[in-house]
Amino acid sequence: MRNLWFSEWKTMTRQRSYYSFLLLWSSVFSLLFLLEGTNDSISGYTNITGTIVNIILYLLPLFMMIIGSFSITNEFENGQWDLLSTYPISIPTYFFGKFAGLFTAQSIVFTLSYGISMAIGLAARIELSIKWLLGIYLFSLFLIFIFLLLGIFFGTLARTRWKALTLTVAIWFFLIMIWPTALIAVLGLVPYTMIDVLMKIAMVVNPAEFLRIFLIIKWDSGAIFGESYDSIVHLFQSGASWFILFVYLIGYLTLLFTLSFFILKRRQLQ
Image 1 (tube, rainbow, N blue to C red):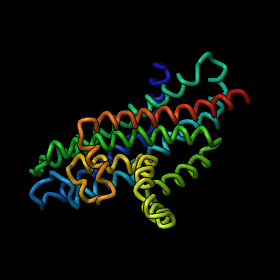
Image 2: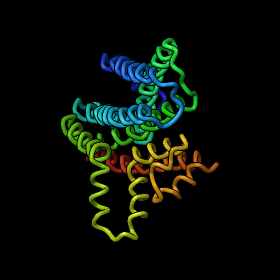
Image 3: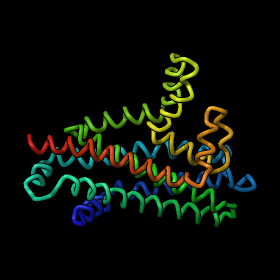
Image 4: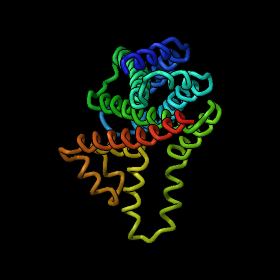
């Protein structure tokens, strides 16, 4: 797995597009931090905070799913998967080695760009709350973690990069762009007594929504969700909240790994 991790890491860092992410995230966060310079400080869930969270939700999942899916389908297209199948490399080793390399590469470039943006903000004498900055940073890393997994899983379903791109964009559009509209439409068709339960199930199904709600509650702004989420607010404000998040992430990892394992095993036998 170590060799696969190093190979994936080296492949990513040799691509010019990899360094474009450094410029992209540095520019986005720097502009948003500078925009907030007209206010007293950044310390909670404000308009600018909501803007930053939404921008991260729009961009990060899409990029991560495309990167994750292309890393698999590219090997299907160029025959590298067939070659790897002849070596004594197990599917779990292949999966976790690839995921570890992708996650390391994307986490490092995001961390560097975020640090540059913070330095620019501090140089401009903008007051930045450590709790707020850490919340945004962890929120982004968790998004990278989950949506890279989703991207790799969707990559196992597609045989070409074009099909992978179509699939990932469709899933991203549903989970991120039209999720609130779709949720409202579905809830309007069910009995009133089932709405609270279905809203909580929907939150668990959509990792972007789960992480967004978790972050906002951790900023002591859970009141914006209304009475339907009171139990979730109390749960995420409790001492077990980080353990719950850890179990959620491991659960997603286990589910996607299991599905990917069977799909890759089937491809290996063909």
